[in-house]
Length: 279
Image 1 (cartoon, helix red, strand yellow):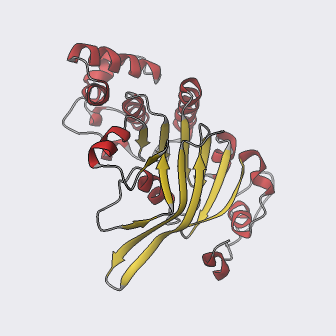
Image 2 (cartoon, rainbow, N blue to C red; image 1 turned 90 degrees about the horizontal axis):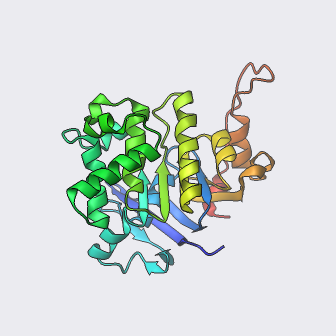
């Protein structure tokens, strides 16, 4: 399997009053047309890694890597215009909560049509028809009504479907989904994940799913990378998650509540300072 994206020895630091704070410490990943899960606690560097690939980090961030490439394109050397052609058109990003990402004063359908025209060109009528078709693809029963609705008139699940439709409009090769279901209830979560799974499979795309939910990722993804404090602790097939060997992964799994037996108290993850020193 050839890699769509190559990340080798990625390091990201953010400035603080007392010096540089390392957020990503030597992450290396090869991402193909597969479903890769990035899991770990908050602050482990998952989202920063995804945004570094799209060059969406704040200007103050210090980003270094031995290699940061997408389909052979050097992300560091790419011009701002080249990055505009990559973002959206070839790499899509679905963020956590649509109500903070959709334009509140623009109808939802117009936002999808705008994304279509920005990357594919065409007239307003063609973009409108494409947006209605995308709303149908993401299983919205009344595309015309949702097209004309403003984001505050949509439920969380409906807003997330609009976000997915907007990211799919340019036909990207890689989709980065950053906690796409964290703001949704369990039933809607399952629907959104089934939808993403179907669309990724039908379009032959690559997917990076960033999540805290280990059981969900193990069912949904092909491969998992477990991150802690800016490092990848372990990579393994999703089907082998329960057989993970690294103590951090084992600790995360043991902290999950179980329904098949009573647990008076969940265990607390014991952290080893040696994990920060690298593999």
